[in-house]
Length: 178
Image (cartoon, rainbow, N blue to C red; front, side, top):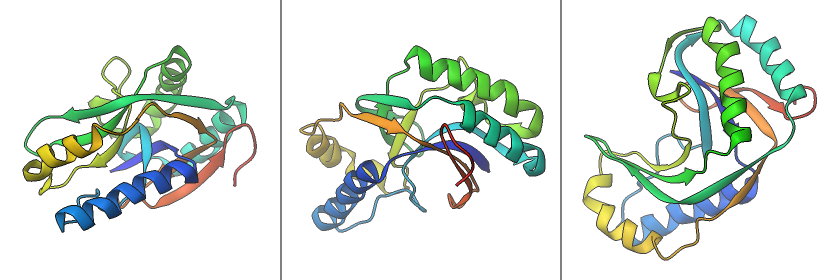
């Protein structure tokens, strides 16, 4: 899988990494998603036409005004492998940006993930998606429910990532490629 994501500023990466360190200390198990790169996924697909994607991403990033994400607490996607996440509020600016980007990226992708399509997308920051998460959920929810997850996150970078969550390309919002 590949994707286009909003990268979090270092401040929020550090907050999340400190939570992971606490979990290892408290539980003796590392529950972070592997590999770990805190982000908000915008578009996910099995494959992109990377040569066509790059100029579109540069254009979109250059024209995109800075965006601030608001978070609203913890969330949980249920299923065989549950996902513990920080919920991102769907403001009009974010939904409009998401829809515009999808209109540009869908023709360049194969096997787009339907969870990320307009009308289906639930923006979030994954804290854990791990086979061992289920057994630790009561403890984690008790611990995390005492924290304030009402964040205002300034977004200044878009990235094209691969399935290992290593960045292929990063674009600064409102400017040329980094």
